[in-house]
Picture 1 (tube, rainbow, N blue to C red):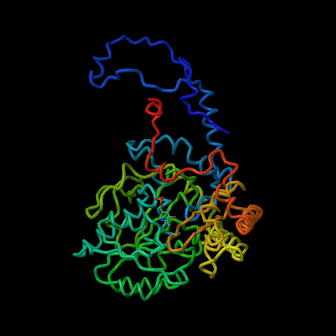
Picture 2 (picture 1 turned 60 degrees about the vertical axis):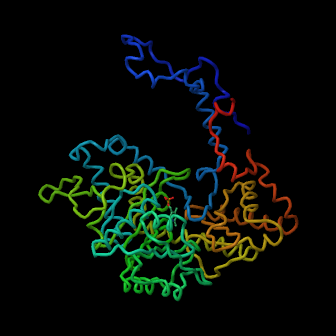
Picture 3 (picture 1 turned 60 degrees about the horizontal axis):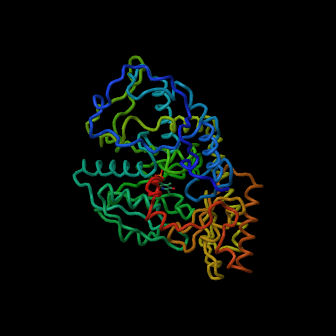
Length: 486
Ligand SMILES: *Cc1c(COP(=O)(O)O)cnc(C)c1O
C-alpha cells in the first residue's frame, strides 16, 4: 500500500504531453523577462508520463476515506452522499463556462438561477433577503456580523459584545472577534441548552448579537428559543443563526419564525455539495428586512419594464464586497439542483431521516457509551467515551480503531463541553444496514476496551499510515521535496 512520491517516479526526459516543435521567432529570454526574474537553473519538476500521473493520483485517492467509498459520520460536518445530478447540471456549459466579466445580457440564465436560489433560501429559512456571495460558513458568519455592526452603527452605536454559547462551533467566537466584537461566553445547562439564567446575567445594552446554533452542537434543540429571542430583542440585540447544519430543520422549522435576524447556511453541508479538505463551498447569508440595505454588493436587480436581470452596485448603505465576483457559481448551482430535485416534501424528508438515523444510533449505543444529553437528539448525537477512558482507552483510540472496521471516525473532542466527546452524524443518506454495521463496530470496540484496552492504543492496524504525530505534523510542516534531499 506504500505509494512513492511523484518525484520518485520521475525519469529524465519523460513527458505527459507532446507539443509541436517551437517555431516562433526565437528571442533571447532576457528580452522578454527581466534578468533578475529568470531562473538560475531548471525547475525540478517530476518527469512522468500521463499514465504515471493518472495511476499515481488514483492510487493516492484510494488510500483516503471518502463519502463515495465509506460511511463518514463526522459530526457537524454533514458528510452525506451528494447526488451526481448536481455535478451534471453545474457542468452544463451555460453555467460552467461563463466569465464573471461577461455582460449581464449574456448571462441571464445564471442570474435567473441565482435569483431563484435567493428566493428559495428565503422560503426555506423565513428570511426576507439573501446574499450568495460568502465563500464558506465562517465567511458567512463574518458577513453576518459585519451586517449586524452596520445595522447598529446606523442606529448610532455599533455596540461592543457578542454572546456565544460554550457549545458553539469555534468559528463563531472567531468571526465575532474578527468583526471587532468582544466575545462573551454563556454556559450550557445540564440538558445541553443555553442556561437562561446565565444568559440573562450577561445580556445588556452593549450586546450587538447573540449567535446560536439550533440545534446546538450538542445535537439538541434549544427549547427556549422563543424566550431567548424575545430577551435579546428587548435588549436591542440581534439574533444570529448558525445554519451550517440546516439538515436538522429544513422543511420542518424556520429560523426566521424563531426570531432570528441573520442566518448563514453551509450549502456544502446541507444542500448537496461534496466537501472536505477545505473547500470549495458557499455560505449564503439571509437577513430580515431591517438589515437588507447593508447586504454586500452587487445585488441581483430586475428591470421592471422588460424583466432583464443585472448586477446592481447602487446601494449606499452596503458593507461592500465580501469576495471577488459574485459567489461560488458551481457550488450554488449544485445547491439549486439539489433543492429543486427534492422539492419541499423531499427536503422535509431529508431532515426527518437525518433525525431518525441519529436517534437510532444513540439508542443502540447508549447502554455502552455515556449519553450526556438523554433527551432525543436532532441530526447528530453526542456521546462520551468517559466510561472507556476509565478502562484505559480514549475517544481517540476508538476513532482510530473504527478505521479498521472501514468507517471514518466521528468528530472527537468537540464539543469541548463534553469530555471524551464522540460526535456522530450519520446523515440522512445512510441505509439501516450501514447504520447497523457501524453500531456493531462501536459495540465490538467497547467490548475490546472492556477486555483489553491496551490493543487499542496501537490502532489502526490495517491502514497504510497508522498513528502520526499530529502536533509535529502541524508545527513542523515540511512539504518541500527538494529541501528534504539536501
Ligand atoms: C462547519 C461549521 C461551520 C463552519 O463552516 P465552514 O464552511 O467550514 O467555514 C460553522 N458552524 C457550524 C455549526 C459548522 O458545523
